[in-house]
Length: 193
Ligand SMILES: [Fe+2]
Ligand SMILES: [Fe+2]
Image (cartoon, rainbow, N blue to C red; front, top):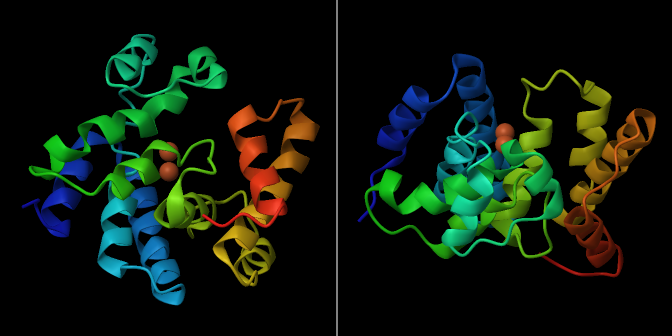
């Protein structure tokens, strides 16, 4: 038996900076809304959402090896920028922090919320989208939010988000991670999460 949402929320509050905690509350709320809309478990989505960034300030140069020891594949972009592994660290610690085993789908969702993955599952999709559009995110206009939310499926929303990200990557000269491109191509070919 794992701890409930309120207890997990208090733990997370103590683990991250106040601004990040407010972001996490936004992600939990939007995750719950998306779950409701798409017939997923609302409580589960909220639980994953509040926890997704719990290790945001814990990833460092030791994290790639730590993840591998725990059986997690580390992508080249994560090797180069271990901060990206905060989702993987959350996946590793989720059972302990929840004080009981959580479903694998929860761990898969937090593990892949940073770069996305075709393996992330519907809860991964929900948290990935919520992470990008929660109301505290100032990089988006209300129009952008509406545009993303007006897609008919979670996969459609991910494509809209990734198209915006791609435009940003081009402006900034950033190369998209292979695991992200794979997700895009998978969805574009009709794949479902
Ligand atoms: Fe994150
Ligand atoms: Fe986040």
